[in-house]
Length: 99
Image (spheres, rainbow, N blue to C red):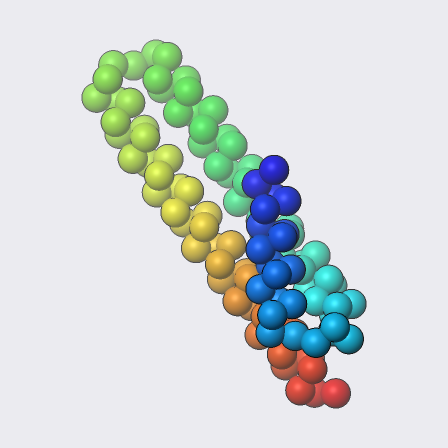
């Protein structure tokens, strides 16, 4: 679900800055960044599993530490996704200008 939302955001942002004729180029660039998004999702899922284990095994103080760390991972993942979105948009613009 998260990947679907990210792909929709990428397509919408790129569609705003690009022409309809650039759709093929946009899709090619977006596929390149889906790999980055998938890596981020895997890291977040693995970290969430670790958080669940910490919650089950440890005391409340550890839960706060684990939650803060999970928030950091999600924020960093969001930054990576936004960088990817901006890169796709810029690549599409430069492809259009080079034609």
